[in-house]
Length: 338
Image (cartoon, rainbow, N blue to C red):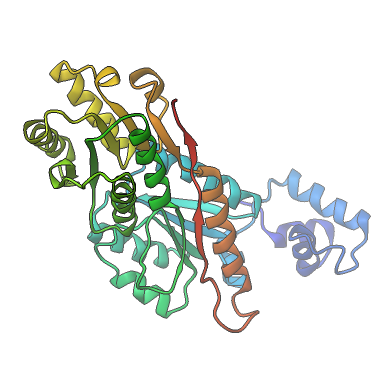
């Protein structure tokens, strides 16, 4: 049977309250002697005492737990952010619960409800943006919530994103300076404001260089069964514009799938085209060593979402007015091949 506060108190002939104060770090504040505090901690260790976190959370009104909902746990970018979130949350005494929506709006809403019922103190979310009913409910309750990578321009809530338009503009501009005139963009999820911003950056770079935007070079890949859909998109681009000389991928996943396509078709894509992508994975070094990349600041994303959310959680009931309305736009680091 697990030892309790009462067991420790009876063993040491102390009050249960005194033992509780010591084990929750309040011994000095309650003027409990150092020798008594040491005695309590030693006894707790010998009896293998484990605190009842559920009872403690009921007492303080917090579980010291946050939820993280990702579109895909297997995606290298999102798993990297999850690692940063966990590390930064742990530094502030919080544990993490992680779930994947699989980019399914219904599942996302189910995960939001589940985390709420589990008593998490706040939620970090990379939303599908196809459904926002549950998010609106949480905002109405003033429940601590923040999104990253994706956001809802029409909702008053905190978010952390990258400078999507500027990063895309600089990447495509670099391809143009390297001599490209017919650059294809491969993108997806047009319902996301972040993806639209990347397309806008692509178009702005072409227009600045006096290059007319060719709709036949804009490849929009449906997310569902995107591997097969990407093949159709690339087939169409090569059919309509066989002289295409550059490719800009709005995500690293699309780039990886395109490289597989090129290999199957016997296309020497590293020689035949200039390449650019938002974010990268380690396999790029082998598959496309000369690709131009706008690297997303994973560490800064993780740090910002955690600090904003936890500050909101910990200030709840202590401050008045509008809290937690932060719009953080982070720059990418450009790695350009000359």
